[in-house]
Every structure is written in structure tokens, then in C-alpha cells.
Image (cartoon, rainbow over all chains, first blue to last red; front, side, top):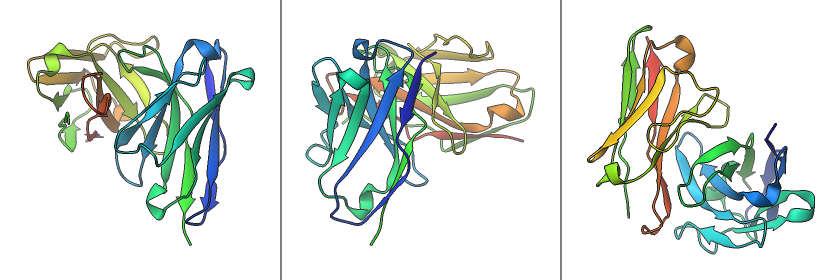
Length: 120
Length: 109
């Protein structure tokens, strides 16, 4: 059975760095891109971008370019979302999801979400 | 940028049919996916490629797409269908590549 398990909730201060993870199991991890989706408090879903675990090729939503970075370690079937300097506006739930078909954007399995709270 | 427009809310009585729309320019030419999100949980894919249903999703869920509107139809609505529903398209020709609609809160009366 396919599972994506994300790291636990985080509480950080503005300016701090952070890396959260998403570990896949039950399928061949390198066969599917991973997408990251943001959900700010009380708001809708926002596409952040994708990473190919095979070669770490990435795509980013232009509105978020430079603010976050994606990485992956295929040897442990894990994808990462990273910030170099957090802002209060980064407070949100972050989901990873398996991209079933790169060209069509359908997300067939989702992680449970990681709540990131940024507050001084 | 490409915008998908959903009604903020839809209300329906149990046993009736709910229609949730998703408007976008020439959306009928694109593949539309629909997700259900219940409070505190991750989204779940309920319709892909505009009208296909993943395994495990009840037949009560169906989708259509034509012109400038895609529609998610939920027949014989149950209390457990109460959730937020999001439409999504992927188009490599648009800057964002992938866009979600703003979401529709389905309330079962």
C-alpha cells in the first residue's frame, strides 16, 4: 500500500532555517514526481512545485521561486522542502503528494501534512 | 495567469444531488481533477481526467467538463460528503503550471 509520511509539526522563529521531509513507501519512489502543496490557515490549496526523485529536477510556482527549495534522497525514498529564512507568512500546513502523471498534475496519494508555525 | 472560479459554498439536503462548478477559460480543453478535503485531513482525489473515478471512490461521484465549466456531481448526498472540494488543472503553458480553484464548502443540511 502506498504511503507518504511527513515529518512532525514545527514551531520556528522568523529568520530561522527549516527542512521538512516526506518519506514514500509501498511503491517505487523514483517512478513518480513528488509535489508540494501549501495550505495557509483557513485558506485553500496552493501549488508550490514538484521534484523528480530520480534526478532532483525541480519545477517551482513562479510566485514562490527563491523562497523555498526542494530536494530528494532516493536512497531513503525521501523528499524535502526547505527554507533558508522563515517568515511569519510561511505559517501553513504543507502537504507532499505523489504526482501520478507529470503532464496532467493529478495527485493520487497525499502525506498527512506538516504544520509549520513561524512566530517570534 | 489562469484562474479557476468555484462557488464558496453549496448546500444540499441528504439524498439529493449536489453540483459543484469550476469555471475557467476553455477549461473544457483541459484535464480537470477534483479533491475532497475533510476538516483536519489531507485532500483525497475523487475525480481525475475530468470524469474518471479512482478506485475506492463511490459511483455517486461523477465529473463532466465542457466549454468554460467543469462540474463535480455528487448524487444521493450523504452526511459524510460534507467537506471542501477543490478543482485543479495542469497546463504547462501557464506560468504556474498547476492551478487550484478556491474551493467549495459542501454543507449537508
